Image (cartoon, rainbow, N blue to C red; front, side, top):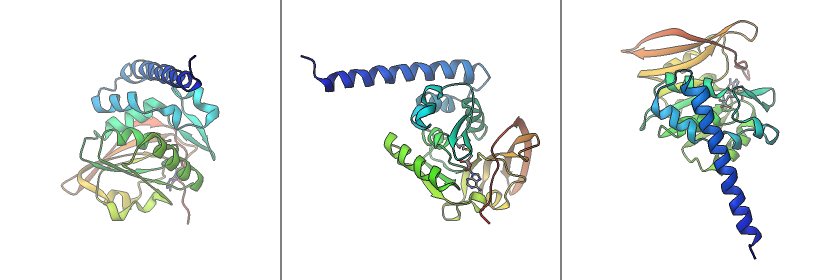
Length: 226
Ligand code: SAH
């Protein structure tokens, strides 16, 4: 007689391969088809189990071509936007990255597949705690989460090779520019909730800061505690 545990094991394997084929379809139809070509970014998105980072009632929709609600009025970005932002900072092994707006932890996990360490700050305590629990369960030990206002960055671990901000700010917080390494890149949505926002790519070279708009977007607002 086949034991229940064996059946459960087989079921888990089946479910995993189903989710992997959903991810492969997502990569082909949403990511590569739209021009993302950075290899490490593509492989990271192929690997990260997005369905394990969304609330239970969203699991079936995890690989859809859209943002999803994660509770507390916040959203996890559409996979393409995560890929676009990741590619735009050209992450590499050996780097240290700061993210503002942990949310579900998905963007942090994508970065953690590529670089050595990801420092991420979330202002909504419940979301920060949930992401910490979910990321630990999946097995990430190079993601460091802090609960608080990300406006001032994370001084103790600065400077960073790159910074990814996933909430729309009215202007680029000066402490974040300061904590960016020379030669580093930052990607940040800028604008208000009711106006068109732009993803801005900031590059620091020889102490000079240049920024350019790279894509119109819609993000939840960057909030402040004070
Ligand atoms: N990167 C996330 C996207 C989450 S949406 C993901 O992959 O799921 C943006 C997040 O930014 C929200 O969770 C919101 O609570 C958070 N946020 C907004 N303002 C913030 C601030 N000042 N500091 C830290 N987090 C902030």
